Length: 137
Ligand code: HEM
Image 1 (tube, helix red, strand yellow):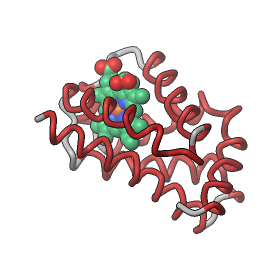
Image 2 (cartoon, rainbow, N blue to C red):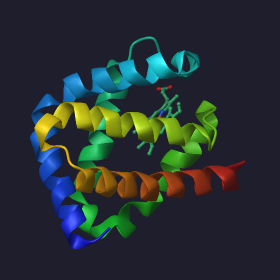
Image 3 (cartoon, rainbow, N blue to C red):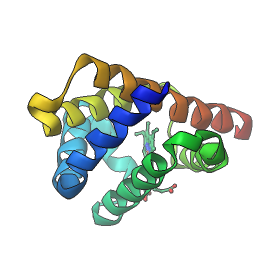
């Protein structure tokens, strides 16, 4: 990701940040509509999951200019996910749903440049998670 992509990711995140709780509900609704089989992987009460996901993304965007320093926490997260039963192929649909959710939240502010930038960010994180989960297996 280049400087301009990191910049537009930061400004888009600032726009959705106050609506994050609503966005999380939308994200999991979309995910479980597309993949009802994923519902049983998660706890019944999703409140804590929403908070953890928001915290992770807040930290990530805060460190976006120094992504190398979050590589280790992505790897830990990837190993945890292997333990939850998440498979490498599950990351594609979550990435698609994440982008759809952002698009929906940003409305007119969404653009193809943002889509590319967020897709690159997701690819960076998910590939670190997947490679750690494969090594853990
Ligand atoms: C870049 C992609 C992803 C990110 C950033 C992410 C983030 C997180 C975070 C922060 C947690 C909280 C627990 C922890 O720290 O270990 C979590 C838990 C979880 N995630 Fe993900 N996740 C991603 C991809 C996925 C995928 C592809 C699935 C597959 C369905 C998934 C399913 C789960 C499940 C089942 C839990 C555990 C819930 C529980 O038992 O409390 N995640 N995720």
